[in-house]
Image (tube, rainbow, N blue to C red; front, side, top):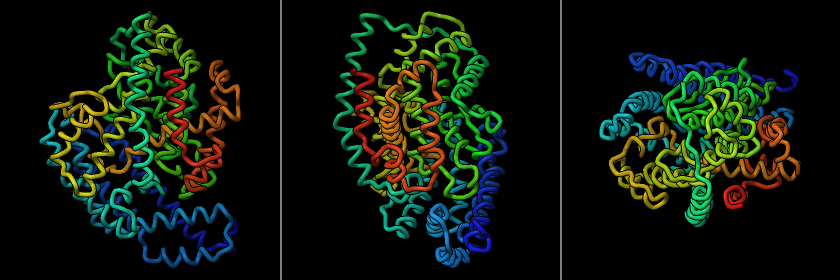
Length: 502
């Protein structure tokens, strides 16, 4: 790149570098709000974050940008620069669909709703939550209508497109419709098989309590085994686990319970997949849109590659078991085979983040089938509990009536207005299965490597094919280059059948 040859493009790159720096501060302030901030600081923090959101919005909607983007298009750019310009234009287009006042009102409403949700959830206070949630929903609908008018996409499609560019309800309906056909039968088959196995050889449950400081040390140790760079990130505690920050400073959180160490441990493994993706995005392009993670389904494919594909692999558990025994003390439940059976036990439950990988898609189907009509105005916030109860009974056979805490209050996504995100989790699981199928084709001895604790071959493949590619290609093209085809959900079904019925 020479500044004289591409002056307009270079000026745009400078603007996006500034956006990255301000976004860095915004992200760290958001992490602190979730992990460290005292409760009385929330109103001031909400106002500060709203101000920052408005500032970033003004930069992305600068009236000079359309002319600069058009001029840069005429400059002698290479392929990577053109991909970066494409991503700039996409960001500019979506930002210009929204007025600054809406951006500020959304930041204030979501900050207030999420902060109240932290105490409303344990109190099972659906009525109190709805009062804060209604303004969030109204603003999300307003945003969806504006984005839809600008893009020509449907209202829910336009919100999903923020997280998963190019994905539409038509594609999701086709993919999820197929899953709905085979998933209930698979759950029953697996449960029957596991019940017979447990009858022949009873499963041994871990006996707690498990000291929180010991759990924390175990999580740190496993993160190091998985290659997380603690010089460029850290692990903290929050109400809902997440991965935030920026590639130079990744902030991960988990949550601990004295009676259940596997939830926090595997949640940490999940977030480590996110963290490694961020830490391994191309540093030479840092600050540019093309250097960001391509989509949230691809991001979730990394967390699920770590948590489910690798984490549920018997070879990984064989490596993990001695670390658990050393950290938490030896007991019969920590026998390697028993531990693997615990980690791959299929048991319908209320909580999405604790769900096994076979029942997990049912949780996503439920949320998608509620939030899409919610955004499109076909149902209202008051309708959510009854729909939740009916779908939980239909999909997983569970009774959630009156249990808002473990029902529609369990996730942070709706109070934070992350409508359109939930499909990315199951799409990510499908991509993760596809990545490992491609790895096995390229490395027939992959399972032997994992069995001997050589996880680096997995990380190298992900680095070369996913992490370092960032947003250079659209999602379908990236998937084709990595695995030979665009998203193919058949790999996910084949993975589940091989692991649980094989």
